[in-house]
Amino acid sequence: MTLSHRRILVVEDEYMLAMDLRRDLEDAGAEVIGPEPSVARALSRIPSETKIDAAVLDVNLGDEEAFPVADELTARGIPFVFATGYGDDAVALRFPGVTTCSKPLDVQAMLRVLETLTRDA
Image 1: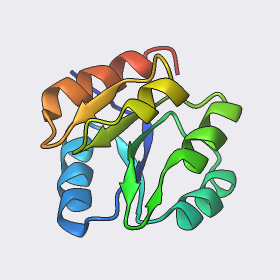
Image 2: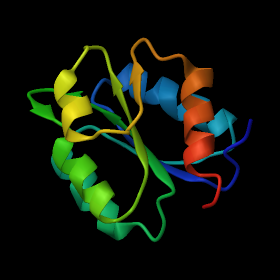
Image 3: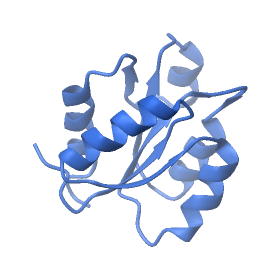
Image 4: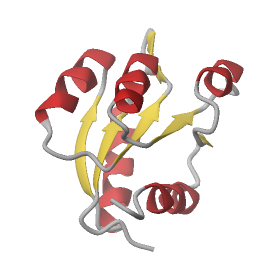
C-alpha cells in the first residue's frame, strides 16, 4: 500500500493524534500538509496549496466542527475522509458517501481508503 507522491491535508486539533497521523501517512509515502488544528487555519491553507490529493478531517475541532472545511474540499473536488471518536449521524446525513473512520483509527484501513480516493490523482 502506498501513497507515494500524494499530498494529504490533515485537520486534527489533538497534537499527539496529529503527529501520529502525520508519521503514519509519511511512512506510507505521502507528503502531509499541516496538520492544521482549526477550521480557520485549514480554510486559509487550502487555497495556498498548489495541489491537495485528499484530506483527513477530525470532525470535532475543539468547540467547532470541520464541516466548513469539508464543504470547501467538496467544492474543489478534493476527496476526504472523516475521523471521529463519536457516532455522528449528522456526518452521514450532510456528507453521504464520505467514509468515516472511527477513532481510535485503524491506520491500515484509513490508508486503504486514502489510496482508493487518490488512485487517479
